[in-house]
Image (cartoon, rainbow over all chains, first blue to last red; front, side, top):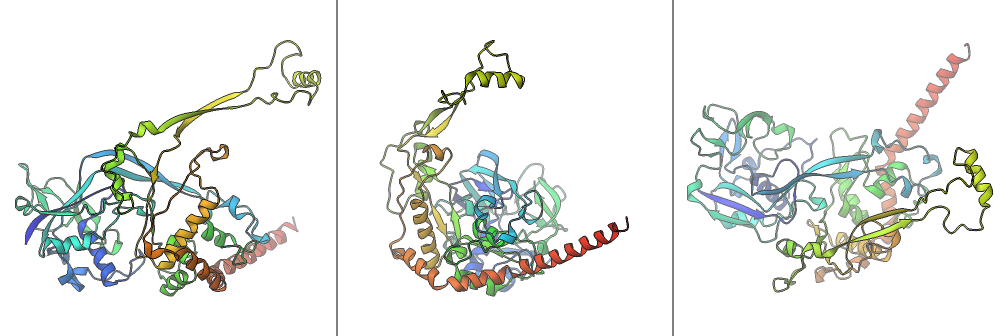
Amino acid sequence: VSAFLVSCELASGLGGAHPPGLDSLVEMRLATILGLPKLWRTDRLPPSIYDTHESRMPIDFTRLNGWPVSHASACIMSNVIDDRHKHFHRRFPVNESANMLRSSELSMVATSMTWTKSYRLPLRVRLTGRLCWIVNLRMRPCDLLSLVEGVTHVGTKHSQGYGAVVPGSWRCDQRRDLDQCWWYAPHHAGPVLMRPLPVGDWLPQNLQGSRRDFAACIPPYWHPDRFTEVVVPC
Amino acid sequence: LIEQTGLSERLTKPEAYFLLRGGAEYVGNGGRESLQDIVELSRVSPLCGLLGGVTPKQMFAGSLSCDSGVLVCEENRFRLRSFLPPGVDISTYQLAPASDFTTGYQYTRSGSEKGTAGMFSEEEDSMLRFKSGGTPPGESKDKSNQMIYSGESIMPGAVFVHRYCLAHPKRLEVGALLWSLRLWVASGNSFGGMGRVGHGKLYSQFHFPDEYVGADEEYVQHVFEHIDSFALWLRRAFGVSEEKSAKAAKASKGKKTQVADKEVPA
């Protein structure tokens, strides 16, 4: 097991408030390759990929409170040049559909309520050049790269072009000085948290840069069935 | 597509929302997703498989990621290698900065009197204005209401690169994209604002892998072969809305009757 710095370059702004975890990207790619069904928020959640296809995951892991927490730090962004809110919209096509509807449907359309409601929602977009993660690998770096090279977009709203990864920009460099940095960064005041971890005795008393939350510590981070008591970097 | 399936002037509002803007989910399926519907939709309509959509009961993911257009300029040199077609190398080209491609426009909106000489009597017009609270006739001339407005635009000759990424697409989905682009080019090939006065006209070139040559014609053929199946799928997927609307109509009828019954004694 050795520490690596995995990075990729971005060609467009990163959409969404939460940058992606490398473990979730790898798990998503493995799910695609293995033909696992796509998850929806309402689905019953299958067990972690470490429980079903452990031998295929190149990232090392530790079980904490029963959760197989992978040895991958949260996403570290390079200098953010621009941090702003863009918007995405939706509106019922009143003008376009008027001549296509049956006569009984030619009624008033409520644009401020119900399912025909129009909206204009904000989306946080950060312009940054490079994303990186510190990971402990238990396989060869090329095994990880072969998986992540298929990732063309990261973050949310990639259907609108946000988070495009520069093709061929994925890199995996060995860094012996970052051995335990997947979960903490050394600091004179105490270890600084680098990824979400479940709350327990293993957390040092002088942990820095963390706050308590009710969230997920393993992918998929968005699924409510994964939520538990955790500490997250802040 | 709507005309070919014979659904024009026969659509319900949810169906029109789905076909024109992707739709909205408002019934739900009790936390269940129909895999059969997903397979069936991508079979009968590769375009829906490409773009995705929402029926009242279920969401369907599309395979298309549509990047924003990137201006070919010095500032974007680093980003361009992600968006240019394979084999195109711009490293030896000298590119101009983005500011070189921006320019301005200025237009005026004419006053209502301009060009209307002889079309009305000036005396009658000034009397009418006076009666409606304006200045007395001959006292002062009305100010011109001509409005000058200006804006920023991109110079002709600027080049944009626009990439479409399809995740694990079927050949017919690529065909649907190529056919849609072809229709877009045929329908004006313009983008951005002020299109009504001729701004944003494009000259478009499309680069795609050789293996997809002819995929657009295959898509059109597939659409014609599956027109009835698509119309049937649509009716089945949106059947709930009709039942619901019938129920709602019944319920509202009942409510009205109750109110009427109460009102009669009063």
